[in-house]
Image 1 (cartoon, rainbow, N blue to C red):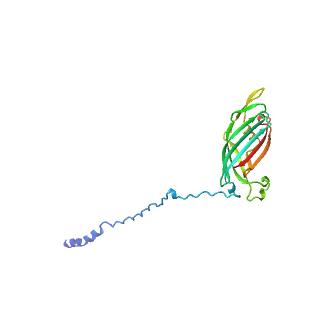
Image 2 (cartoon, helix red, strand yellow):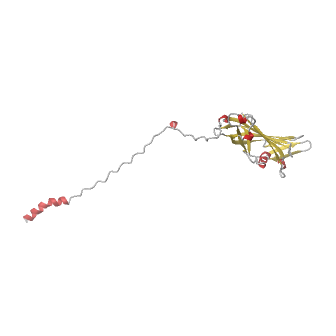
Image 3 (cartoon, helix red, strand yellow):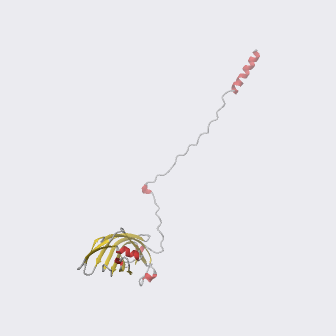
Length: 234
């Protein structure tokens, strides 16, 4: 009995060592995520890359700046009025791309022989102009321009009414009668001629004068001879 107890005592430490808690394997340490880094640039130190200027096939510098464009539309030999004149003058600025735009007030002057004609409504209205400059065709250059330094340019302009529905109301007081009538002669005439674009040499005093004949079997107020003058100044 004593021998068995002694043997148990000898093996008890070994048994206890084998039955002890196993060693825990530690979890790997997570690598910290680096904080985002950046540089704060004050607004007054920021450099904004400008859009590239379109490359033109001609030198636009000589015509850059402010110009004065005059338009005159003179209707004559009308069936109701003898003469009806629309005219406007507006300033434009030609930029580095050769483009321009502007705004002006169109005046209306009616006339009929032996009558006192006035415009009751629509006697002055606003129009806008937009366009660009381009090399002038050889057949449109003035005499002597072929040998001039640089390439002759011309204005290409388009007029647009700010109120396309505006009509003019006229009153004519004549010795034997007084009458009123409405019309939209200018824009209707230009539409009937498919006339939207106007050209003039891009130089001080440059101008073009073109003539047209308008005959409408339906709208007799459109029946006129029309002369269009486009003048360029500064």
